[in-house]
Image (cartoon, rainbow, N blue to C red; front, side, top):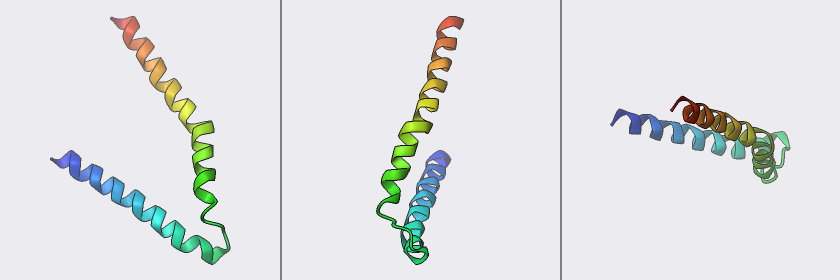
Length: 66
């Protein structure tokens, strides 16, 4: 039960950070509607391939050890 509480707290923090960004970015004259697609583009271009590679290496090591 404690894991669910931690997971819910993590999601609430993420939602809070996103909401604060969308409220505060226009104050600094930053287009907040264009920020989310840019973040998704960077994540899919640079971050997700490394995550995929990490799990692929773990899978290969697990298969080799069996």
